[in-house]
Length: 65
Image 1 (cartoon, rainbow, N blue to C red):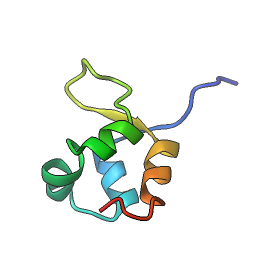
Image 2: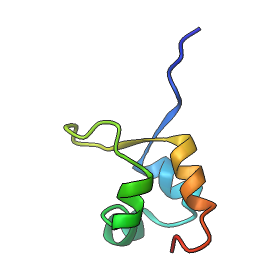
Image 3: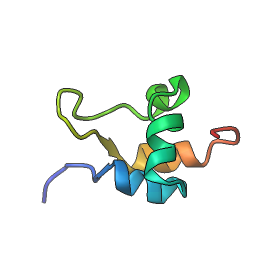
């Protein structure tokens, strides 16, 4: 058994947040609040990945949108 935490790509993050991919790219992904609370786990990669737990926690914030 590995200790790796489940990661999600931006499409899965959009599904968790209930927003479209275009909305995520234009409004959420580069916002200061999102970048502070949900760090990119692959910063040098073409496609960002995030920890599922971080995205779910961000969704539960009262004023994330």
